[in-house]
Length: 326
Image 1 (tube, helix red, strand yellow):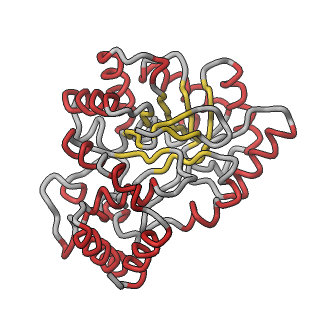
Image 2 (cartoon, one colour):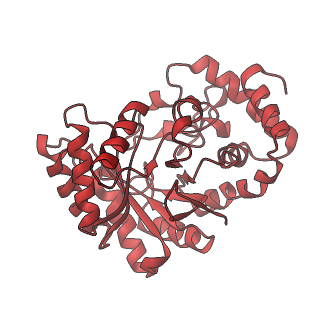
Image 3 (cartoon, helix red, strand yellow):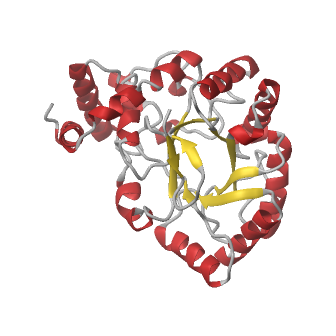
């Protein structure tokens, strides 16, 4: 396992990390969750990601339970929570958003669910159109000063809002955001590579959905719906429409070309897609979502593929996915 610096901070995160969205508290029960966390930690993972909204708080409870059961050393791993959507199916007005109140209440609730004294990373899960950014920055700074949070960041915020938060923090001697958590994969890359380009030297990137919700594995080709896959079940926080993002024909054509390219190389499409994310030096950690230890181990094969990713190899993948030359 290699470890990467999170932006301008001194925090080193494992380049592959384990997330809990859709899996923990949903398709993954306690026994499998324990196996996943144990195996991930043994493989060098030191970063575990969750959120208040995942399975309405149950994902964080399960993650905290198995980490405590495994007795992982608190100084040997990092845990993050995301706040904004609330932890209930129908949150009250003060149980969601990025107000000073919900940030404090959300942090305390996450600490309790995760069974920790502090959060290594606390993420503002999406922009809040109601709360002033200045209020959010001041509230996060207060949590840092109280020792409840070490680093805080954003997820899928527009560049101008992130810049405002950074600028307001610097002008007022407050702790600003140090990480952004965006979606990043071969089918969804413009925000990370273009919009966030001015931030690459300042913020770390802990990216999610490296497989585009499973589409890049090739398992949904020709309308296939494998048993147990996301399209075959109902999960908290995920809608089948996310799979194609309104571009089904285009996305399926690109995936077909990508899978053909992976077959020519003799590698699994999933591992190749994750390795592509790792090849971006601005990515601090790629968050994996796994429902079995076998899947976790298979995804870790991506680390051995990264050595192939010179500029020429990257161009071949781009050519295959975008234009169809394999």
